[in-house]
Structures are given as C-alpha cells and as structure tokens.
Image 1 (spheres, rainbow over the protein chains, first blue to last red):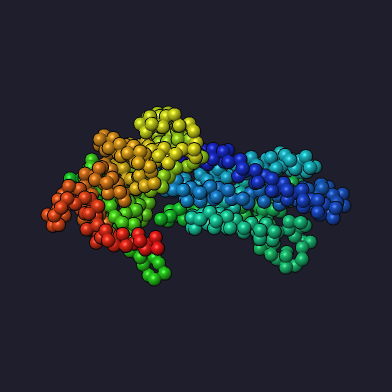
Image 2: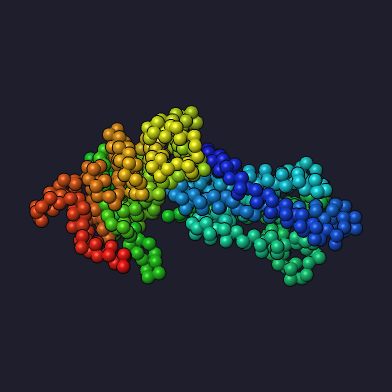
Length: 251
Length: 264
C-alpha cells in the first residue's frame, strides 16, 4: 500500500505539471452540457416535464457530461508514455508490487476525477442545476463519477499494457462513443425507440447514468442509486483483476 | 565461490507467425564478484534479451540464472533488491526533477522520506548534477540524462549493476565521464555487467568479456588473453575489433561491403 501511495503521489505531481492534459477533460464535458441543453432544453421545459422533477433540462444533462468527464482515461495515456519511454521498466526492475504499478495510476485518476467533478458541479450550479439530494447526494455523485473514471481508465490501461502503443491506447478510448451514446442521454429510457431502448438496457453505463440522475433530480429513487454503485463496483473489480493479471504477465 | 551472475543454459523463445523465434539459445555465463564484465555482440545477437532476463524484466524460457546468489525466476523481488539497472534508453520520467526521481527511487526500495532525501542528495553530488537537481529532467542534455540514469540505478547501493549500452548516442566527452563513473562504481566493490557495441569501451573498462552471436556465447576471456590467442593464430598486433570480427565470423571486407550497399 505504501508503494501505491508513493507512486500515486508521483502520478498526481505529473498531472499538476501537465495542465494542458487536464484542461480538455473539463472544457469538453462543459461544452457538451451547454450544447445539449441549448439543443433540447426547449423540448423538455422544466415546469411541464415530469421526469425533470421541477428542474431545468441542465439537471438531466449533467450526469451525461460528468460521464464524459470521466471517460478520458488519462491514467492509461500516462502509463503508455512510461512504457514507451522505458520508465515503466525501471519501475518493474525495482522491488515494487506489480499491483502498485497499476493501482497507483487508477488511484491518481480517482483523485483527479474527484476534483474535476467538483468543479463541473460547481459550474453547473451557476447554470441553474440543483442537487436535489443535498450534500449527501453531491458527495455520492462525486464518488460515482470518480469510480466510473477509474473503470474507464482501467479499461484503457488494459489496452496500454497489451499493445504498449500510445496510438492504440488513444484509439481504444473511442469506445467512449458507443458506451456513452447508447444510453438514455437525451430522454429517459421509456421514451426511446424500441431498438435504442434495448441497446441502452444492455449498456451498463445506462444504469450509472440513471443513478446519477436520481441523485441530481431527486424523486426518491434510491434503488437506481444502489444499482449504479453495484454496476460500477462490479466493472471496477473486473478491470482491476484484468489489470493485475496483465501487469503480472508483462514481459 | 559465489558468482555475482551465473547463468546455465539460458534460453528465450518468442512465439512468431512461423512458430518460434529463439532470441537466446542456451547461454552459460559466470561473472565474478567485483569485476567489470563486458557482454559484446552484433545487433540482434541476444545481448539485451539476456540482460532483460537477468534483471527480471523478461521471463526465462529455459535454463537457470542467479544474480548475487539469488535465483532470478524463483525470487525476482529479492534479485531486484540486489541489482541496479540502466537500460539502453535512459528510463527517466521527464516531468520530474532529478532530485524527485532519485528520492522516489530510494523510497521504492524502502528508504524513509528523510533517508531518501539524503540518498538523493548524495547521488546528485556524485554524478555532478547538484546544480541541475531541482530542474525538470526534460531540459537535461543527453549526457546529464545518462548520468542521472546511472545515479538512479545506484541510489539503493546495489551489489550488481547492469548497464545496457550505457554510452550509445553520447558525445566523446560524455562517454569518458560515464567511463569514469563505471570505474568509480566498480572501485567501491559493485560488480558491473556491461553490454556495449564499442570495443574500445570494453577494452578500457572490462576485466573479462564474453561475445554472444546468434544467441550463443562464442568467446569468453580477458581482453588481453583474447588478443593474445588471436595473435598466436594469425600473428600481427590484433585489436579487440579483430577479436570480435574473428569470433563472430564477420570480416572487415564483408562489413565494408554492407556499408557500400547501403550507400548505393
């Protein structure tokens, strides 16, 4: 655990020194939030749209943007850079637990995501969003987003460890499109066309998004929140297991 | 006698489209404690693959290896505690300062924060990087990076130091500085296992050397003995270059022919 924390500290120092890599992870999700609300906000007026529970459409869109923010996988991009430059071999030649090599990057990703999510939510408050479930809901939203960021970075780390190529790792990140758009991102699942509803129901990200919406919009649907945490925990466990397996076999 | 490095029948095969590729085909090596051992060979001969197996970075397909008396395959972590490794490309993190990199390395080897600070300071002094220590590595010259790489490999005071082509790409002045470093490190008792393409480097630094070609050791001995052996067979005053060409079956004419081909 000590080694994990030492390497997490290094990864966070690296993030502080590359603000140019952090900036897009805040600006692009904000862009999505503003554009999506601008495009569909009038179709779903807050006062007459039951699924908004009295809020504006921005509250419905915030979870989608938070998921975008958590889908950059920057941990994997830094990891593959270490591999390409030979620093990963220096770490592997030291008596460092193989688990610490991958865990530290994911832990740093979760810390970065917590900070970025807090900033995103603060900005969304200025756009009129209210977290209906209060401070507790706000904290759960932070944790859920951050956990999703770990899952996504974990997936991209698998590509980084397998291919050892930054180009391949970056391309792997494009899975973000089907994962985030085959969801009820513009309207609730019940309002989607049948094929789209089936696709969204098969996509685990749907359940995380719906859990986040329950936290932002309220409505007392804590079952959805619980399901979101269960999905993200299961996906996180699978990613961690596969990461450890791959790093132990890294030859 | 406990050898600093001992390998028996060391093999590495990789899967390929046509079956398997044998990168190392049964290497036997014995490196004495306290010596500078040179590991020479043409490109693709299996030098780096052997070093990567001995330093726990690659799995061993067959055979056995011990480093500082510890079995590489059975106790990789124990081996890692006893070795320092500087590979062909300086394994540095450009975004950290030299001091941060050394401190981190010492911490990973179990030093407390204050011990790690002291060790980093000591290494920066030893490799003459004290002034640049608090600058990010990105701005370092090639020679500075190589010295820092060496310092990082030494921060935990290893018993055996592996250097894979430590002077490749360096200017002559930086090369001489690295040679001085290797002599200093060896003088305090650290065994040095060095691969190089520069035969002059091997002649200057190594107590003994082995030449690998096609994944097998083809010659082993002290530079003086190897030259004397060739002198007795061919006469004249052979250099280590001649010994190398003789051992690997390459000739100056063939090498010159290859160069001409490239130019055409």
